[in-house]
Length: 267
Image (cartoon, rainbow, N blue to C red; front, side):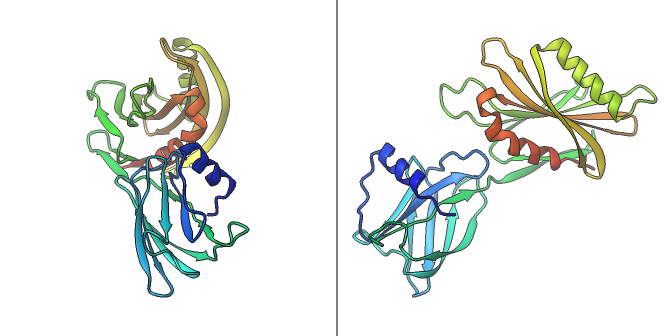
């Protein structure tokens, strides 16, 4: 993945002064949120037997500079990128130092995938994968909501933690997926302020037909929220997977919410 103008802008904003000669650098980000991954370790092994390791700063930027140590040689280079809470990334890249007119810079950006942890609920007979660094809270077995996973706060001023929860209903005899889907939409419309339905669609989760909807609503004391709801029916039970984020963050987290929902399994 080559990042040019954007990475140069990152350097300017961060106020970093990288040397313009013999320098290999880039930014390490979270593949799901696009946010920087501070402290990530980037190690290279080049075709000439050279190797080196650099740490990403608070903005996710790492750099190999000739004046400070080895830099990757031209040709095929193997990079290994690690960070706590993320899957290790090992990838080969072609390094030619052609990312600038002087032929002295090499820019390589890396996106890390968060580690996941599968949550099992034997009493209710299901499992689901949440990001490993999310906090999991189980609810009483008599409650409609069974489990909730919440993202870590992004700072002291983060007013809303992105979250996903699983809920289970006992359905009236003869209820089907469409009935349950419409019942959930009706319930949200009745209970949530300024409720809006934006999108609907169909999916397959663990071999079962499912329906989904993108909705938004207002929440007391917070900005507007946007969410993704999946429902499916198996036997006499209805299963709901509900995810929510602040309105402006929803596009960033949507793929994470979709991946979590698709990881649902009946056990």
